[in-house]
Length: 541
Ligand code: C2O
Image (cartoon, rainbow, N blue to C red):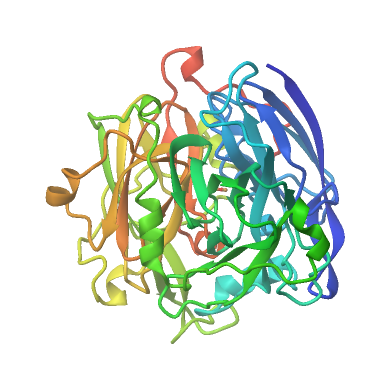
């Protein structure tokens, strides 16, 4: 195994998109940021220097960080932010993970432009469980704002329902052909007839589930969230924010140019829907001469096409030899996930309908980050008064979660509550969407883990009828589960990684509104079951 050293300088960089230039935050002046390409078993040492005027932290999304929670990155959860002018070195080893993941800022909304791909190849001497492709390309889906992202975030925090639609969706940082002033820089992938391409699709968008498809071509899904899955073919994939999906594509169509495209999957009632499509171009090398004709456009599903999403996700199956699904459960948890509003005194910070502002919650607790220190430091150094460990195991009130009930029933409480798990315990969590404000599809991400998705469905989870239908044989393995709109999903994992681990909606507006909680997984008995000591350069608050 190898150790890779990188220097990441977080800085302000002028970038031109949609005919205009403005300053964004980047790593090393690149947008998207640098790709990290490693092998399973390798170690990464990334020295981050903050040359921007905002606090920043970086998160390696989906990397398990076994015993190294100090390198996970969410600000005020596992570390204090890296102040302007300061430096922090992230150091971690890839343990038994292969495929595509990504890294991103985990400080307010800076991940809008601070992100890049992580590619984990098999150990040397081993290979993919599918035929080696001729070409491999990261396809990073994102969103572009014409404005300063911190201003966009403030607006989302204090206003009503439709504050912050982005100005474009992007592929590898480019809006693509169909947007103004964007043609020249549109991402192009050149293939020869008969070649196979591995597309490593990452949804780095801040607030948007996205459909992705390629005109006239079939996609064979082989991996999701850095776990191999049983291959299946589909015309379109749906990727929630935070998720990654690897697909194989064979250039088996008449030599020409074809658009690959992504568009919104927006499920919320009254969602601020942006009906734009971002494109890249798949061009056959032998077709280049007559490339004056415009590329073939694919058919994308309608923005509210939940049926296509369900059809796609229900086909995802892990390779059973990878799956050791816990069957005896030590902790059965039931968390509601959803949006709500809280009453507030009229003023600039209270811009929702009828003197309210948005607040999102799990089990009616709207998560508040500490400021004095990080949760992990507070735990490790026994600093009292930073958090409590009474996060409710089940909702404090039972009701018809997806029915039409009064908002008054569910006014979220703001608190920093953790849920404590014993090392090695088998955990099951039912995630239940609520209809308090509006039902919505929530991509829920667990730091430090991946988990089995043993079931999902619409309406209210019914323990009698739904439990018997769990897939304990080949359930998908993910680090981010898209809980269906007005529905539920059930995940299982073994709590084998001690630390404090954020569990949250990967839609940043929902995260900002508090749709998060944290697990505290206690140390086990031996050194290999315990958190390593903190690095000497860990920032202080
Ligand atoms: Cu991809 Cu908490 O993040």
